[in-house]
Length: 120
Length: 110
Image 1 (cartoon, rainbow over the protein chains, first blue to last red):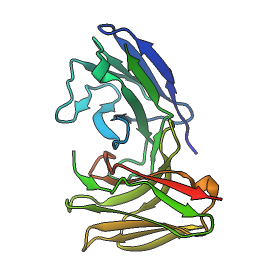
Image 2: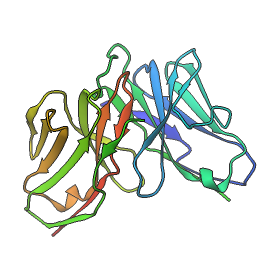
Image 3: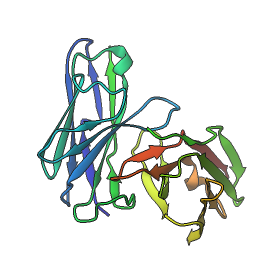
């Protein structure tokens, strides 16, 4: 199946600094990528939808100025957590939808391995 | 984000037993229903995908959807220790956006 890669897998940063997480579709073009956040024992919560070449669409309650998303190409989206604080510590997961099979179908969505962020 | 209810209580079963998981939802806008398996500290892996009421089988896995009751289920037959993981239900509400349940941690005891 299609592969989505995230980097880094683990990151520890100091409070107040910014950290960038990359999401790459390795063997397919992804017109749309999604960023989720998962706190321990909680469900994955969609943060934003990222479309190549346009501004991301954020879900209600997600601060767009704090979580900067860039989708510069059909294979790369980045999430930057700015001025990170301990409450931002979480598991961040991206997913990508396979180009040419859009619409509302969920079976063409592939998830990355996730990135653990710890803010100290 | 749309709400999906999944009782997150852990579930322990002996090897060979049938695992039964379910989710409920209230929003009729959900059209596609999925079950994902997630191992500890890993991304979710798609197990089953359905879009209509009824049953869908894939090997030891059966996904069941009842749109009139807004209820979906996943059954795992002949469970194996390797099936031990967290199982998440997910529903699509348009443009590939997914709403997830909290997940059920399943432990299959050898």
